[in-house]
Image 1 (cartoon, rainbow, N blue to C red):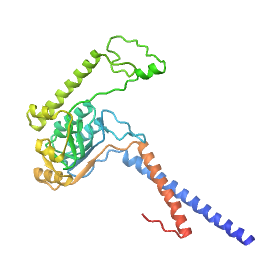
Image 2 (image 1 turned 90 degrees about the horizontal axis):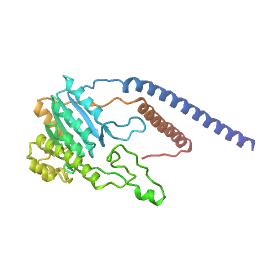
Image 3 (image 1 turned 45 degrees about the horizontal axis):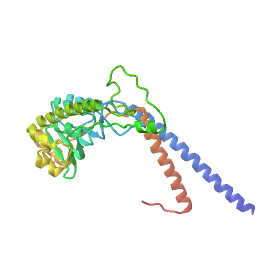
Image 4 (image 1 turned 180 degrees about the horizontal axis):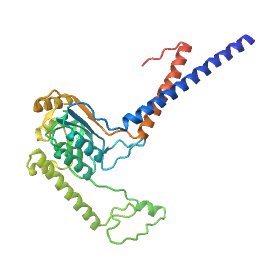
Length: 313
């Protein structure tokens, strides 16, 4: 009996040593990665290559949240900065804009498109899975658009919406006390129904943005405004349809986009990924996530060796 208790105690002791060692190694690894990450990720290191690769992913907004609470949006200010940085680099001969976005706000989309138009280098848009609405607007600012045959593009149009809770307030006997300096100051408030006049004002603004949208695409794609008008009803098109309508120039992917650049510039393309430096919050979050995973993996492997169990995927 005593012998069995001693063996159990020895087993617990070995596990205690294993756990302490794993925790110690994880902490050392985490601190090392954090120190390196702070100095490397937050610094502006010019990537090597002759073709700047810039990704536009997710909704395009003027200001996107950064850090571990990141919403997966594209910050137009950052994209504009990256475009300008690549354009100023004499080693960069062309810009490859990879697009996978459902669009964005009117101002943010305009800013990205305008920055591309102002670039003095060859620009190519590669629409991967989707480049619609404001993202398509940005794509039209490039010299050449390559789209996957099954990607979605187009969706030329403007949308505005809001939630209206006036019925809910009435149901719970709550009221909205309206104090405004002008009759339209609280237009679009969710706590009251929109009047006919307010709807007309909103629609007029939407229509004005649509006019600018259509005219910019017609100019960028060298298409008659009348043709773009017919397509500007919000419909999206697959790549195969888009090329027939003149909305894109070529069907394909990254290889085709790079090949077009190489032929245009007579170079052997070497992509240099241009991206914003990570914030300290993002570095911390990634470090915690990665080392938490490997720490758990270490426990799992120790148990597998101890019990003779092989785990594969």
